[in-house]
Image (tube, rainbow, N blue to C red):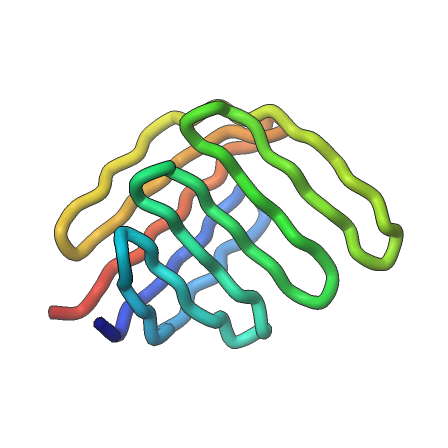
Length: 112
């Protein structure tokens, strides 16, 4: 099923907000951001994956750890994260987590 949505990612230094077309299938949501970043959210395993030409980032919100692969450096970085809030509703998903002592907020609001 495809839907239009607004995604908003906030940190202390920046805010990104844009309209995207999401696809929902088997408890997973995926979409493509304007900057060519592919995003996959697995609602069941509470995993957030973001990939573009520069990096591959996989955050395991349940386990509190993440893996970031920087492509041009061919370097893997493991990070610890602390889930502050996860709220998965019918038309809205809110995820707040702390990584490297910085708070991040991710929101996905779907149109009916």
